[in-house]
Image (cartoon, one colour):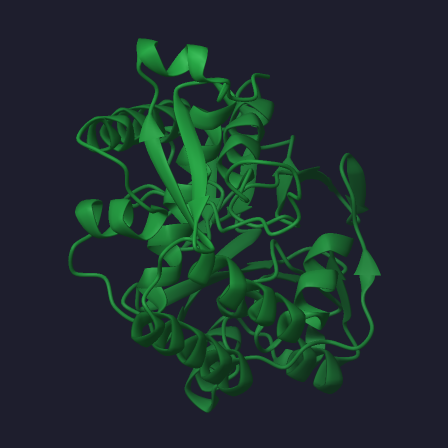
Length: 335
């Protein structure tokens, strides 16, 4: 892809996941900048080198690496590129914290998945897959520069604005080029699939642990009024219908909230059981993604007072609120 007067080039990098490729973008302005890097594999690195060569560049020319968020298909080979080029790596502090504390995140995740009804076999498979993928496909950078909301990333002839958009990941940052209307959005907006709001383990109060879906929807509306003419996503083809993507993301989760509530109207269920109802063929890492998404929907429904939760033998169960529930003293938390 070549657009915006030849300044932005999309590089599709192979990833060993069903989605098959992740996008990196070369911004051909000084300082030469790469947005996202793909996973740490020899195949991905070879494709990057060959793609740069076709553009008359090489890895050593890269002066700056911008990471949209801390998932391995976006930062995996940043350290290798930086070590060869001397490029500085930029990411949000929450992304860096997540990358550097992945072991603790996985241990906490075991507890949360168990608490939400995930069978031991599925739990072990999901965590084992995650551990092996992180070890094989990423190399956490040691030294980074932090970027935050409303930051300025200067080039010789233009400036990018950083916009913190938590939801899919706590440290996700979009990069907006006001002159030209380009938006590098990582996995915040995708054209053909819906981003998964990954579980947020920081919530400690009552109810579902994850507020990531509510965060995601706020972040979608946060950017909705930008004048965007070209969306540059982390996966798939760039697209122009920015407003349509915003509306589609919101509509998808409104429909999913209704489905979750409908399932709960049939009787009490765990988050895992709801996820298997909606995504019956999930295995391995997809179990984590399924429970993660359902917890986000349950959190919104809980905060709206539309579901109740209780714990039985260390497992959380949810059910839809009925009128006769209210006098029992189980009044849910409301925003």
